[in-house]
Image (cartoon, rainbow, N blue to C red):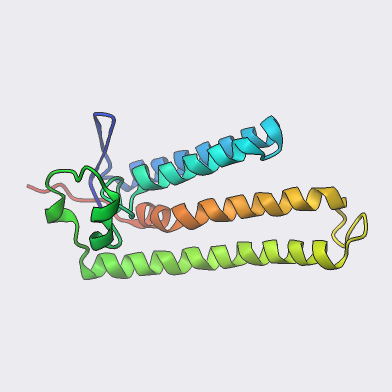
Length: 181
């Protein structure tokens, strides 16, 4: 885990767990606001694609894990060289994860995949009910036209969580970083 977040020339100190948790809350509050705004703008039409791209950018640039930007070190440093251009100076020294980081990362991925499995189960139940019980009101009670929007909304949420949740769990649960002297 990095101890500072460098963005647009600003260097934000992220050593304390409290600041990192505020960052995670702000990211998910911003994504929720974007998805709510895109619902009111055009019922998750083209604006949902912009919200999806914003979630992917937040994941890559703020949380990290995929390349050398963000707080979390790259999960696979060999692949990160291909995705990060230009490569920031001095990252060769901090790019490797130790055994504790790898165990912590694996546990975060395990818990995030449990959440994602539950969300995919919800999407599957809605799609199953829509496919095999096509009456106007369905079993759950929604009007048939709302099923497509509901399934699409759950898929959007699941896609964003699949890209952000493991890193958010790592950033949320990592203890305070002691300053190096």
